[in-house]
Length: 136
Ligand SMILES: [Zn+2]
Ligand SMILES: [Zn+2]
Image (tube, rainbow, N blue to C red; front, side, top):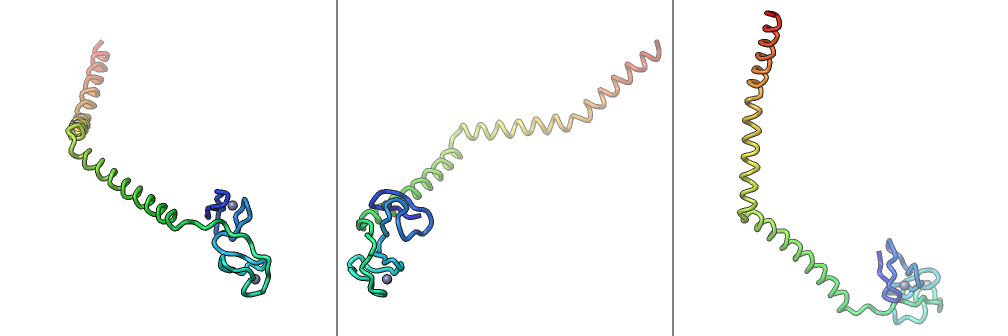
């Protein structure tokens, strides 16, 4: 993916020319696609004078700025994520929620352990009812 500083169009892949305005990126290319420096008037390999027009020079500051912004955003995101995680672990709400979840799980375990008793009771009462029906 290459950004064209002439028209602002992004061309996917590793293009030699901009998809939009047809300029080459940081080199002058002859019809046989030999790369030549910006200062070249004639292709150094085949002598062609039909060199492509390169995009305007990208100021080094811009490239540096782009790298710095990317790095800065990455660090900021990492810092925010870590800070959020630490804050979350420190907050009483989280601890309360943790305790609540723990209690809920404890309750569920209790219910689960009592489940067979309930089933036994149900079966017993059902048997009792059936017995009564038999008596009648
Ligand atoms: Zn372009
Ligand atoms: Zn050439």
